[in-house]
Length: 471
Image (tube, rainbow, N blue to C red; front, side, top):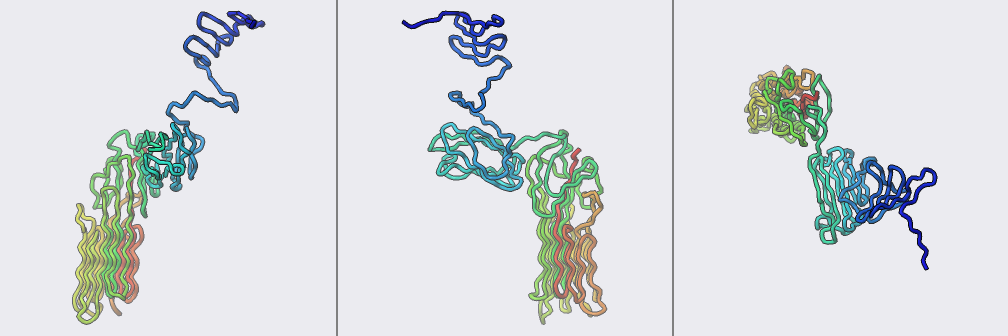
């Protein structure tokens, strides 16, 4: 016969409090207020309100399942290729370069999440790679996350579709300082304004906006690459196109005469930046014009490259090549047979004009001077029989906190004793040569290269500067 012990309660000896208590259909295990285990007819309750249920070190759990969420690994920011684990979420920092997340072997219900830690997926992509021949969304291949702020959650369903992206965001919200927040280029400050300077290709990344819409106005200056000078008594290269805008009440500073009264309104996005390169100066052989500069671009603003300087074909019956049109036009060459006209400025046209035309070369001896290239605020000077024309003047702005002149035209060449080569246009233009090489335009000013009888000067590269209120 089986032995039985029949009791309703078991109490402690020390204080007679309940260890096990039976009351109707409910059994409580534990003494005092804690009552850690309660068993009734339909449920088992572990712990009490405000308490904690913990597994001992080294213990494991089964049967509880997951809730469709992941455990975010905040203590391990990923910066290089790694293999994910089921049930985990990862913050991925691609600011130092693109990398890959290898998914674990798929099993029904497996879940992995990733998120853009630094909002740099557009610049440096994050690749999601399935295990072996498994699929992502029904395709046996990698998935690429390439949008800044992107986050995605993948759940493994079955062998037909594999991992399916069940949740995705494409704009990660950030905290706000009450003003524009952005990164990119070389960053400096001036009072309450932040300045971003780009001297090469890059990305201007706006991650937060101002609480007051008026403070989302951004000032800008976009200068294209200058044109190269012409050879063989060639004209000076035209300056790169110069465009500027700002909202005075938001970003006050001394602007150029070419500035428009409104800036660009910021949005949370990535703005690709192009700072155009300068055009190559002409060589004496073969006889060609100087190359035009390349455009510079920010948002809806494009400045055209400066036009190359014209070249004289000195062979009998040879035709003189005029300057090339551009942001500012290249200067015309000098020639005993026919003079070269200057290239048109402000091409393509914008308002206000982004630059001026190059000057006209001379047919008068004994020095047959070539003309200067156009600048941002003045046309290139025409040449005379004894002097090359000076490059047109550039424009002065304090957008970078210091009054700086940019986009000056290149000077025209001259030939022989007693001649005077064309002076460089103020704003980074290169001087013309007198039986010598022309001078290069200054980089990051968009200055035109100087004309020459031999090797003409190269145009200077362009620059993009953005300014806004940040505090």
